[in-house]
Length: 140
Image (cartoon, rainbow, N blue to C red; front, top):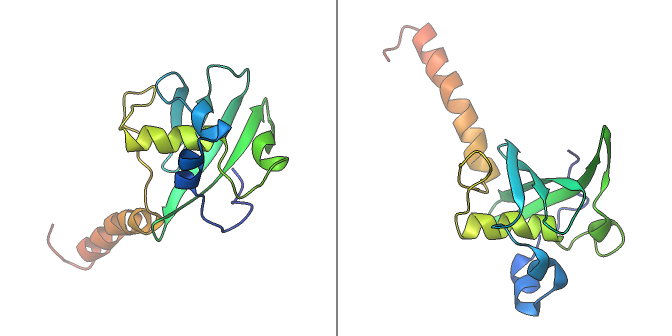
């Protein structure tokens, strides 16, 4: 998964308020959603032949992310973001945002949650800190 094409936050509220095609097409109850990492999902919309892999996270409260089409081992940027405004969320990103908002579950039955990057960094550090304390004679 590539890094975002820009650091401009994704404005889901504007897409929702404008009734955009991306927002209207995003249907988390009908889509196939599979989490593959803490900030990465594979999304297949019911009207699409392709699966897209999206990365979505919160950075200081703002949503940032990217979407790529999966075609075997090849990946390319989502056409909606490639040929339109790359700072605007596509239907696949909107699907994950909607799923997180209304607490839809993925194919494994886990709720879709968009995490804050700082929280993930802290959670990753906690076991290492505990291991270091134990190695130094600390108590568990």
